[in-house]
Amino acid sequence: MLVVGAGAIGGLIAAKLAEAPGVTVLLAARQPIERFTFTPLGGEPAEPDVAVLRDPSELSGPPGPPGLSWVVVATKTYDVGGVGRWLGRPAVAGATVVVAQNGVGHQERLAPFVDPGRVVPALVTYGAGRPGPGRVVHTLDGMVRVPAGTGGEGFAALAAPTSLNVEVVTDFATAQWTKLAYNLVGNSISTITDLPVREIGRRPELRRIGTALVDEARKVAATQLATLPADLAERMLDEFAAYPDTVRSSMWQDRQAGRPLEHDAISGAVVRVARSHNIDAPFSQMATDLLETLSPVRAPASSVPRTAFT
Ligand SMILES: NC(=O)C1=CN([C@@H]2O[C@H](COP(=O)(O)OP(=O)(O)OC[C@H]3O[C@@H](n4cnc5c(N)ncnc54)[C@H](OP(=O)(O)O)[C@@H]3O)[C@@H](O)[C@H]2O)C=CC1
Ligand SMILES: CC(C)(CO)C(=O)C(=O)O
Image 1 (cartoon, helix red, strand yellow):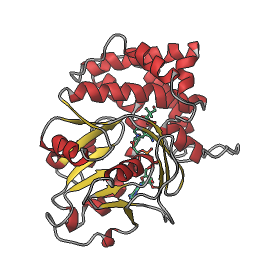
Image 2 (cartoon, rainbow, N blue to C red; image 1 turned 180 degrees about the vertical axis):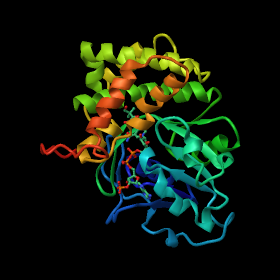
Image 3 (tube, protein in one colour; image 1 turned 135 degrees about the horizontal axis):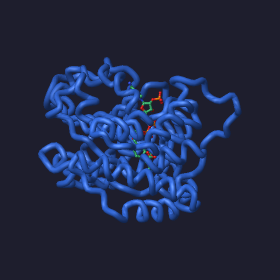
Image 4 (spheres, helix red, strand yellow; image 1 turned 30 degrees about the vertical axis):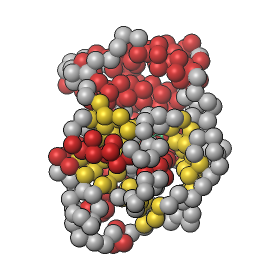
């Protein structure tokens, strides 16, 4: 199988799937990686049995068996345009493509490259960081949620002999909007305030903003047939409060490294759906505007030196 994106989540998924006997894991990287290391939760860095590729031409082989049956896309949403170089190779022409990204609309995002019928959207609740190229650190336990159906169940079967926890869910719309609500609060607020995720659950003023964001997300989610429970904000914020200090949101890590931010796929997605249903979403709109201002796509990264994430 091939994992595209040798970052935090791609590295975690590749390292865990490499535990399966008889499964060859290839990891497609964009920048040179001398050594790929994965530090499991509370463990020491190790070198998993994963082969790092830099160029799609290294993917030789015919379509279908003995070509690759599985591809996991784990780039940021804003980088999805670059995955066509990998997905266009004959060796993966018949593969099922698992899209491990935050946000909604996974099939639509991949539509320029893969038939939506071959795409399995995946919601990742693990937390991970990448302090340097090829160095991946697991920071928060979790799982990968996939929808019921042949693709989701096949991926769960592939992961079954490994420590990658894959759950098949029937109400995927609710799972997807619940995860979006976590990221709307966790990623947006931690990035704007430059704080670890747990502070959002520990500071009363941030809990108030988080609750307002979840209330908005609940109204918008209902238009997508997703039901967010009434106590979601309280449960989420209590969960955040108990996170270790090492859990930094993926968007915070992007800000730290001077990379573009994923706000368009998170608060931006809430705003778009809200607008199309004439729902007011001022908190999500404000988060989007602030993150747009911080994102180096439009504004140059701050000249204030930032400490490296380790
Ligand atoms: N980190 C986390 O804890 C969590 C992240 N997520 C979600 O998972 C997704 C991935 O995030 P995360 O792993 O944190 O992101 P990272 O930025 O750590 O990793 C993304 C990787 O994709 C690589 N990449 C980008 N374009 C290409 C390309 N064309 N070919 C090959 N590689 C490419 C990047 O390369 P380069 O090194 O050059 O930048 C980078 O290594 C996001 O949607 C995020 O929101 C979900 C749950 C938790
Ligand atoms: C780990 C978590 C839940 C933090 O909000 C996340 O999904 C992310 O960082 O993207």
